[in-house]
Image 1 (tube, one colour):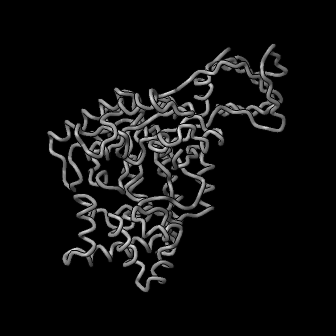
Image 2 (cartoon, helix red, strand yellow):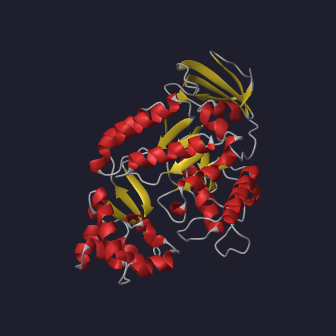
Image 3 (cartoon, one colour):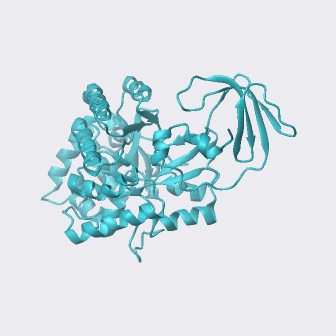
Length: 425
């Protein structure tokens, strides 16, 4: 039976794509293509099979042995796998598509759909007049992609609940008022109506980190009737990882929506052994009826801001206040102690590599480890890190090496796990 490429693609992960179908699909193919002699893996879990595949424009016309097609372009796939396009379920291609709409780093890996709006941050909703807002709504973002960018990949976006909180409550660490809660719920409803395929959080990042469990349950309730997922960069991925998984499950159960745990990891050597309890909790929630899954990238380092090595309470009020707290008499010692403790969870400052800075004189630090930079500067690693943040307005990117190859293999081979990039396009 003929099927569109979209429906063929959906077979890669029926449960995930049912909840997170591409919100944008651009262009239509017009050629007839016959792919011969390949091994077809269709993504449904069915055994691989030797077969030909006939594409007719954007329709998969037939799959079977020894197909013929007059006038079709023929591709010999001998010795190769033929599969639907892959879905990058956790992508940060939100902004990079505007600079590189061809997204060759994605397409050449066989990825045909990316899901953006991750870790609590999305291109809308924002308040009208917000000087930092490129788009005020998810609808405006998707319309701009379709009209002006026309990327080479399908794009679905979540609504970031950190973005929603920032638009209504701001960067303050406080409980939202009843009026603010109503406004945030309305913004989530609007985003879902505009085509958002779920909601995401980044609970290690301000301002999303300031949201309580109850707030998140309320903001996720609009997902339930649409069967759309809540995707979470959890509140912790190291020492209190197990508790963070419990919270994620509680939020999904409270909101009665599906759950996607983002880039699941056990960060820091002392936490590698927590993989058993973590997977047991996820498996148990699945067995009890929760629609739950997780994703994980295929490497043992993660990318984040250097400010993530510092306590989240210090980010209350935004970057300017954070930088001030690094040296204020009443906060500096506490910030230092908690930051040093955080660095210890990942094996020390040696495992923190500077990936990007905004201050031109600091460019030479890119690609180097914090402890090496500190040694060359004749200061303690913490002091170098704090100084780097001050000079760059807290805008410093890092790569942190803190994970286990053995655990990586266990996550990627788990039946509820899905590979992702956690990168741009």
